[in-house]
Image (cartoon, rainbow over all chains, first blue to last red; front, side, top):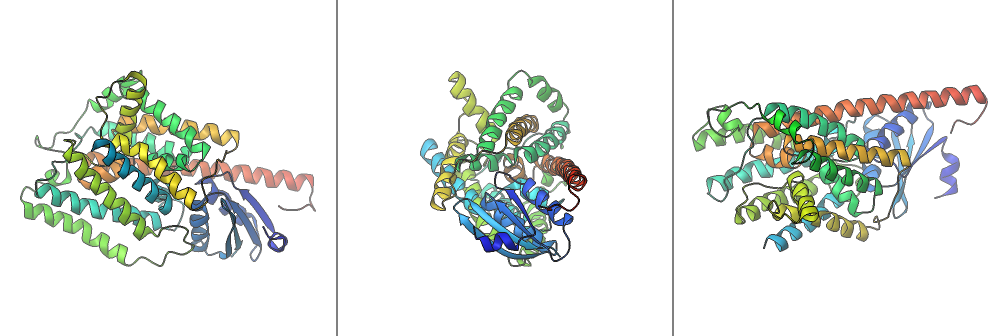
Length: 82
Length: 349
């Protein structure tokens, strides 16, 4: 996990042991708590969520800045709130 | 043939489910919660292949599909209960099976729950519920409860007209699909095509064994449990070997991608997934099928019990997703309020 990205995020949410629908529900609720332009970093532990969550937040109008696989079963999704 | 065919199909199916992240809970839920329709498209493609394939193989005399009687109360109640359960279980029946293979311990809890739930209803202590709810049926002029017979379509031409009426709009919708972004693993096209072909192959291999049904997870789970516990092999079929192969195939796919890791959810979620699996098992055994037996195989025959059950699986999924969403929102609002009260100038994350 890069420290640079850690610093850039205004908020971080650890959903490594979560499954759907909690991964998207919690990501969506986190984003709702934030202000426009702020960056959320989401840690996900399975490939379905790491694929579905970015796609869904993108379709909600937020900007997906990156999806990085940092370990075999660890994805970091960075999103800027719309 | 039964063992080798079943295990091979199961391995391939498990591999495809894992590579494609094919979870029908996500597909059904997306109508309510998300705007992404990728998994709905994968499901539609599976149905497209199977509606056409099953009708064609039936006309060629290869298959004589078995269709459930229209026991509508069981289809409605069982479907709804199953749909609610799969949200808590963190995956549908097939989703739970393949996720066990890659080491998600919450899904293993859900599978244990599913096994217990199906055993309780199917010949178990709660069999009375199944019998009561399946006691009321609507007769379709003494014929099989399919959309063809409900609409009185007897000739081959009329049947194919209905199939064209269903499949052409589906093809048109699928062909307008936007590019799938943020893809990990297989696209919806590849996943839908693979699962669709394997589901159709199951019909053919089953028919060779004298079993007139396609892919299913509920009855094979019950049969396998009964065999393991009592030694009674009466219900064992090619499908029972498929469900054994699925987690192994998923494990191999996950291992190749480096995703086969034992992962434990928090204790609350673990228990919830177990409860969700048990609820799913009760629902599937009442309705006579799950997201595969009804929502793929049964719907492919245009069976009205399967179509009804699928509609109520979706409804149950939406209701439970709504409950989960509201409960998580309340929790988050309470956390934010507590944080603000404790440290007004504090960090937000």
